[in-house]
Length: 138
Image (cartoon, rainbow, N blue to C red; front, side):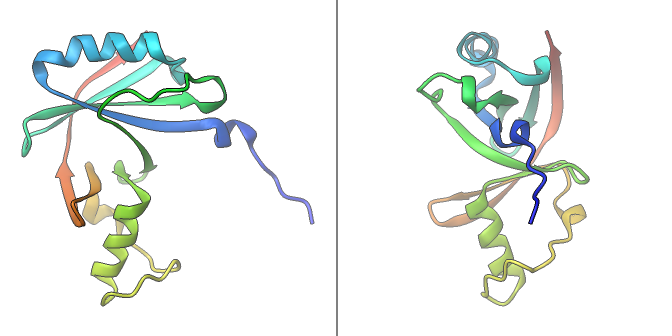
């Protein structure tokens, strides 16, 4: 059986670095120095509930440094709803919506999670609403 595998997609990782407003500029500079950013874009989002900023950016994992920046996590994205999520958070969300059962075929209504980040923190599912603060092209 033939499979179409896009090796560029396999190498493309979406990173999310959390930072405070007073560290935003230096965080962006560090990201640019540390990584080869794909598409030459960094999306800066604001999370009002925690009063912090997140920088999201795509990195070619085949050409990245051995270290990940502090306060950085790997995320996945649903483009149609602009939802960012970790796999653990997605699994927790499915359990919440599906009577405690993890079913890999369960369909999430992504529009209900539009413009947010879904994380698991201390064993608890968190939904952090986001607003675009700035898109940096370089």
